[in-house]
Length: 360
Image 1 (cartoon, one colour):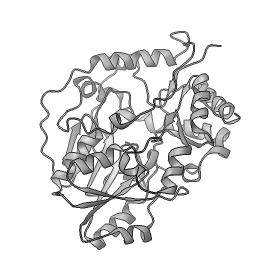
Image 2 (cartoon, helix red, strand yellow):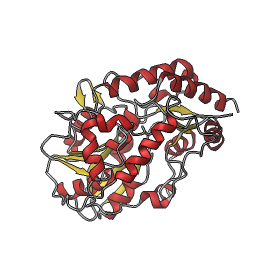
Image 3 (tube, one colour):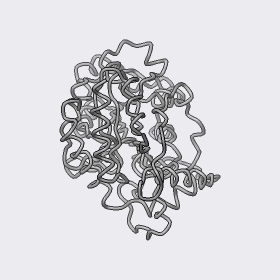
Image 4 (cartoon, one colour):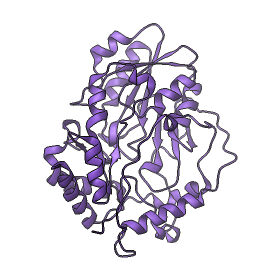
């Protein structure tokens, strides 16, 4: 049986080179206090320095995270204090946070998971009452809004991963109330990665090339993926050159439409925090809750759907802590493709594959 190859990160359409460059870019790309980086962890590093956080300062950080967050924070000299999140809301619990605040606490780190807003205005007020910074992690929610307010515009600083929303090789953003000093020289070319993105798009499109036979499973990441790397690394020249050609107004609409089609099929395995897509939210993936994550990912791959294996391997500092809700989320949540490069037939295929894999 031949199967497609459908990934959660959008591939790079070959037609991008023929598109007209967009004039005005969406928030926060042209705002004062915005700097561009290769990866969001680099923006986080520079933002912590710009805000004046120093050795020994504490940051309240959710335990459900990739791992690069805690690595970057502690490499900066700050200390991460982990808090659990409620699996039914993925939001912090004010009572839990209150017990963690000390005279060394300087910031609350809030993750807007998978594009869903998590009430930044409320937590900004909570931080102001305690003299803390609010750090908004918007790595998964570029282009998302909450009641007309762009996510990331409320806190003292915010970080975004643009390449997770559009198919450029790399590229992330820091928006900080205190402008960061960044050396943007020495960007890599990145055109080889762009060509690989074009190849992924071709493999996805039945109209242009036969579907590939078989498919690799979702990547298993480990300690190497947590590494900070070079915080001064700028985005590649390919990413910078293609960005204006990719940021179409239709991105949000197409992702939302794909989410709604999938919800019609997959409501029963959709976890509670993500069943309602608020107006303005831009979903990164379609999340499902499964019993046996490795088996589910393998069965998806058999049907050509490469699920997002959300943070199944915790950073060693997280593994040392008993955080039952975050552990459940790591062990059971999988992301399905929902991006703007999918065709209607792809979305239907994903829905059918997701239900088939769940029947194992």
